[in-house]
Image (cartoon, rainbow, N blue to C red):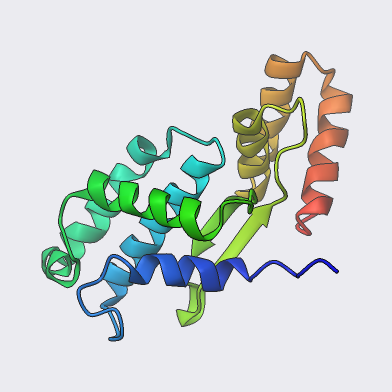
Length: 172
């Protein structure tokens, strides 16, 4: 009998706590958001989404600007080393879990993770995450254009695909 995978919100919380000096304590909102962001980046790197670090830098720098003292809550201030540590943690503790994280955050004080199933054989994971990300953020026109450019779909077929993705994400 197969075991139900653990909730991604629990796993992300567990991973984020690895980065804190006081792992049993309550971190500042800024530290909580940044550690969760680093856990998200590390997780997605292990499932083949490799360019996230650069893309997220402005986000954590913006959070840091709000509370520069947040770094005192971390075990380190070497971002790459911390993400690398989480990559190793994921590989050791969840080597067979290949779900991909679409969104990860703390709305209303509770960790929430939206994820996609492991990439299907022959599907470009980076491409698929881009499409789902555009749809998830409400950028339907950009998603249609993305499909037209990358898959040479007609506007009508691209719109149908975007609608199917929105329905799958329960936002359509």
